[in-house]
Amino acid sequence: MFDLLSARSSENRARVLGLAGLMVAVIAAVDWWHPSYISLGFLYLFPIMILGTVLSWLPIVGTALLCAGLQEALGDLPSHEAAVRFILSTTGFSGTGLFVSESIRSRVLAARHVRQLEEQIQLRHDAEEQIHALIESSPAAILTIGSNGRILLANEAAQRLFAPGDAPLTGQRIGDYLPSLQSVVDATSSRVFRTTLQGKATRRNGEVFLAAVWFSTYATSNGSHVAAIVVDLSEDLRSREDLSLDQMLRHTRIVMSAIAHEIRNISSAVLVAHRNLSRMKALEGNDDFIALGTLIEGLEKLTEEELRPAATGGPATLDLSSILDDLRVVAEPGLAEHGIASSWPAPSDLPVVFADRHGLMQVFLNLVRNSERAMEASEVRHLRVAVSQDGSRVAVRFVDSGVGVPHPEQLFRPRWDARGQTGLGLYVSRAIMRSVGGDLVCEPVDRGASFVVSVRAVAPAGGREDG
Image (cartoon, rainbow, N blue to C red; front, side, top):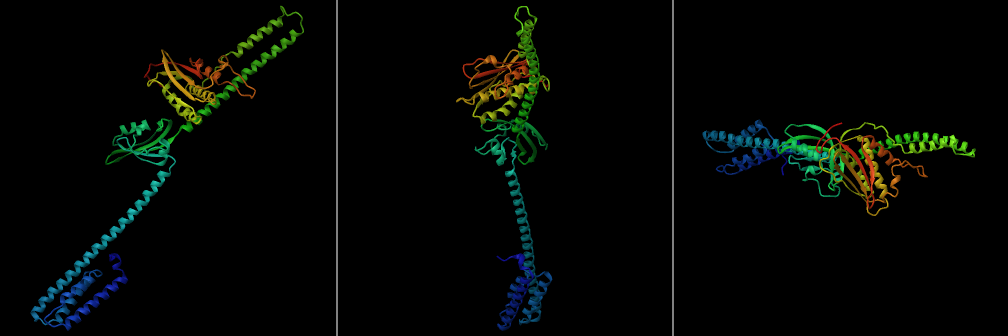
């Protein structure tokens, strides 16, 4: 196909002019050689049309005058008829050349515009590919949601986060995965805004995790859409809670060291009294013997004294549902890693309770980890965390299918084994609960173990108070 943009280059322009000049010469020679009654002047239209592809209007008009003059010079018409034909021929040749020139100019402009559009389209395509590569390679989950709450786009990270190895997220309801973001979609108006939120998210397999969401809205012809970046914060939450548990245990070791120091003092006094009595023959009525009995009674009372550590944040009114949600986010992945199935039945509307949030979470985590260790050798591994209310008390039960409790009378006593490990978890956990008017007990079951955390309700079901 003839390239209009290259036709007007210097090299092609010279070729076109040479071809047109040759055609004019050939037509003039043939017209001169042919009989006079046959005019070939109309053939000058062809070189004029060729010249119209490369010349502007002034050279075209000049060439038209030349061709019209050659036509009349080689013809034998009377002078008055020749003048008329000269004018008509000049007009016809000029009009044809100018029409071709203008058509070519329009085509050249159109071709340039098309080429610019193609370049812009290619640049836009390259930019889209770069954006697509950026989105797909992002470690954070990226989603776009339509005004109907359906997922329009989800990158690979979002697929791994919400539905690994499952059907694509596109077309699914965002409310099935991020209920808080569904509320944003439902409440979105035409106003554009950008903000963040944290909330509970659910994978397609039912696993719950804590998600941080950065989102913004944007307007389209189909209504307001939402673009969101989602990050799983469960690992960070677990790390924070593990650190808090380690801190609590360190504090507990300090308290127990102080108690051990007092016990050593009493033990020293007992030994002194024992040495004194060992040198006497008659014990009856001996003051040292009486003192020894008193010291032994004091030692026994001291070992049974409840440990009551100060709560870091102090007791307050708490939303038990939110604490259980956080517990599930922290504990469920660890249970799954150990092959332990878990269930979390609870009423949909729990009352507000009186407790220390940090301490209550540590008690719950301690019970979950005790259950993990108890089920290490069990064929059936299942932990059930159930919630019930009886009047002004709310009970949270941790029931596992582990080895059970062989010596329940020793559960809540501090002890040390030969490896230097302590059994202070339950001892401290019960002390924390009792310090806020709650309790921790072990109830008998046919198989496994069941621990009940009891807390005091301070508002009816459905109430919400902030401490």
